[in-house]
Length: 221
Image (cartoon, rainbow, N blue to C red; front, side, top):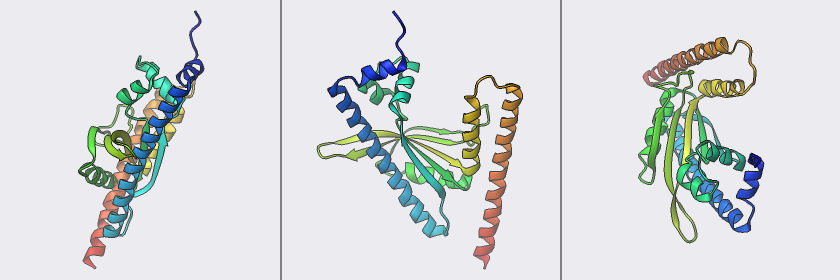
């Protein structure tokens, strides 16, 4: 028997009307949860910018994982292609990326978001204080937030990533380069990327120190 392609599996997953409706309903719930968390972050951004006269984050991006990516992740984890498997095992269907100017803004936003009484922290990974071996830096949260629908209140999970502008620039380039095939001198390129990640981290810290000096001078005035 020939091995089924991902496209065939995807077609099977949404082949009948009932499966399509259940899948679409689940995606709608993830989108609602994503909007709930985004609203919380927007409110924090507005309040903190009022207090400090500057925005703690530069931009915020939201996405719902595409069906093909969902199927591929289920396959990688040897999970069945079912709605139940998605909801019970995958925490990154709804994703938010928050791009901040300075590292200390990241920690403030994480603190204020996670102490809200309707937010449950499922997982917290600080790759800023403890970078990955390749130099990757970011702060990852998996949070659970209730959504209120017409006939139910349901907790849903959302992944939130916090990065500085520099961290996001590095991660985007590293991701593109990583998936290129047959790269010559790949080992040296990996070392160079790690070196660049360290330089970006040092720059983030220096820029934060400069901002703190400016803030201190303004407070004295």
